[in-house]
Image (tube, rainbow, N blue to C red; front, top):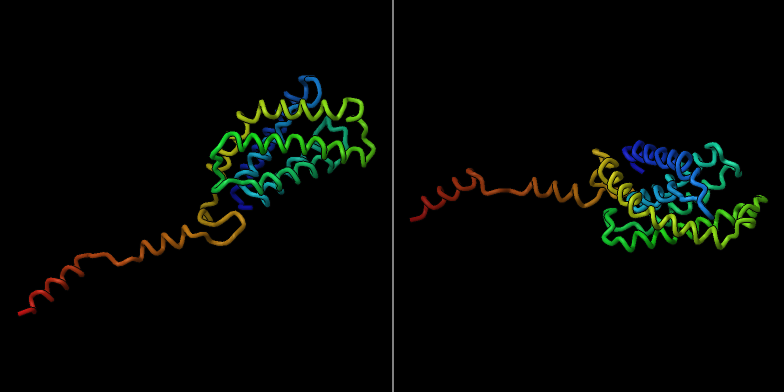
Length: 212
């Protein structure tokens, strides 16, 4: 993951966590709570790829585990968002640019359902039975509904900010997984190609003058 992406990701994650805790966490909506952090992680993963998405997801989940009023085991949400970031990064479009809104919504829908089930599963392993009292089916349906309603506003904005401000000027032509891309090689070749300058035209005129 490029160094230039760290401050951009940190700002987006902190903003998403602030909205999650201070706004959406207090709405008292039926069923699940709208998961802004999940949408931020998905948006970043669709630009950064699986490795960046995994790191961003783990950092976002760990902050959510530590932020009050968290009442679950530390590391539980970090594991969920880490896996969601990696999975969403595997579906990254070419150059991190989503060509279809429906494809991005499908990624969000899959992440919403999987993260809810995985969170409940990990909770059951550590003795958290809150999902049983609310109803796992209701949690999945409401989480899917809320995240899909917010996705068109959150995910495109996150992807736009990540593409615009997450570029490393020292490695713009590098691929996300490391190694130079074809961009730098192409620019080098184009700048080194000989051109028909004044010296070349002068040689042509001298050659023409020597002919009988």
